[in-house]
Image (cartoon, rainbow, N blue to C red; front, top):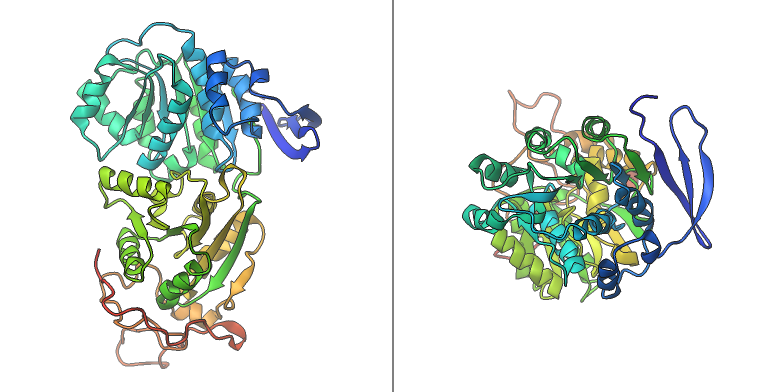
Amino acid sequence: MPGEVPTITQGCHCRHGFSVTAGGEGRLPFRMDIPMTTFADLGLSPKLLKALEKTNLQTPTPIQAQAIPHIMEGRDLMGLAQTGTGKTAAFGLPLLHRLLDLGHPPGPRNVRALILAPTRELTTQIKENIEVFTKGTAVKVLMVVGGASLQRQSMALAKGADVLVATPGRLIDLLERGDVSLEKCGYLVLDEADHMLDMGFIHSLRKIAKHIPLKRQTLLFSATMPKDIEEIADTYLRNAVRVQVAPPGKPVERISQGVHYIPNGDKAKLLESYLLKHPGEQALVFHRTKHGAEKLMKLLDSWGFKAGSIHGNKSQNQRDRTLSDFKSGALDVLVATDVAARGIDIPTVRHVYNHDLPNVPDNYVHRIGRTARAGADGSSVSFCAPAEMGELQAIEKLLKKPLPVIGGAPWAADAIAAAPKPGQNRGQRPQARGGQKAGSKPPVKAQGGRPGGAPKAARPQGGGQSPHRGSKPAAGRPRSA
């Protein structure tokens, strides 16, 4: 069919490599076993191979072994892979291989290759990973993100860049000022494209694409495959090959997952009990809101944990310092909003806690993908209050299986109906002592008396008791960020 994207899908690992199923619409798939390759087998430059020898990358991951040959041939490519599977090297290595052969600087304000990413954290991670491979070469890698000095970024771009890693908003600022030119850009990489769509960057992408020549190589990488991604692929990719190394939306198998049913007011004390079970092991905690993340971090700090936070209310310098402290081991717990769900690559993170369930199911996969990096094992525990049953059901639908219950019991229908939805009581003063206890009545605004009586209290099914009944957080708990 016209415009059809050929598909290569990794099936399962074999004894001497991995199996691949290839095919397309209207054609029967065929299966072949591909021997596990080395980076040298992929035809990479000797300079890149030398740089690889100094890293922990010994053997190409499936996404790297599949994508690199096509990219080196100049093909447009759509890569679908779980988070933590090595996508950055999959596009970074062949991109650098092609740039190393040019032998002359890019020219003032010019950019040869553009990599777009949705968040500042992910942009920083990509730049750092690519710079590992460019040591000892003349390739110049720059990064532009919001929250940093626009003037300094403009000055850095004055002599041009071989590779520019950018967030869409800041790049548009620089384009409108005339501080950067994409007229000679021959490579466009869209990393975490699904997250870019979630954050509303589709219009920014259209603006940026108008500045890039049509004659270019475009690479699109994503961990999930919503319908909008296919539309982007149809718009920006030409004669593309699709590489898929796992079903979209499926987490890494090395992550043990579970759900703990708990009233919203008891989540902090429950989190404390989990953190005390693995002293010295790093944990990442996700919160739904910026204010809530800061408040929880301060509470954990008052309880004696070495905790930090990153979210949209922090400046870039503050976020960079906190991430640096977390990477160095100075912090044991990092509390974050979804801004960090795709931008943290720290192999020492062993535990992920969803203090609040994400309202976008795909974000669950990206959150827990912050653990079990680089072949390690990891664990994920999600706390579920009555008002979050809908989010939990959406996550389980995406995973195509229920999460194992490791605490509490699924909430009864009357508890779900009575519970305030996330953000419903925003702006109200929180309860001074531990929030809503298990078995207590949630606050209900009277409407012309009490017809029908007050709603029933939140309670687990089966008569099970919620943990920490009657527990109280430490006095002096901060109420504002």
